[in-house]
Length: 70
Image (tube, rainbow, N blue to C red; front, side, top):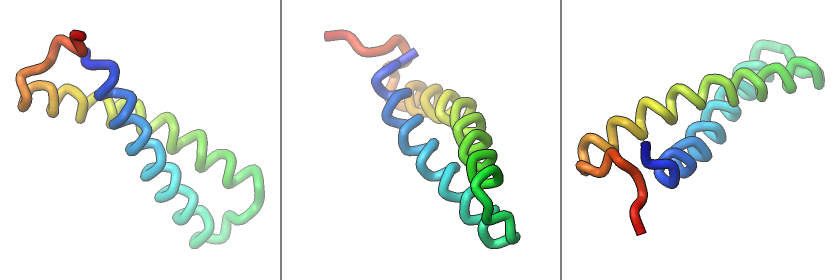
């Protein structure tokens, strides 16, 4: 797997998914610290398989599935 690509996609996916879950928690009235922390953890856990999926997709499109070679 292309680990540099995975790290870039993971950082984007984590930021977006944490933001979505935090906004959803705030809109639905769960605006206390434990609820926000749960939203952050769920966002981190959701972004791992999403980043893995999109890394595989981008790697198959570009033909660079083996990873970074200097």
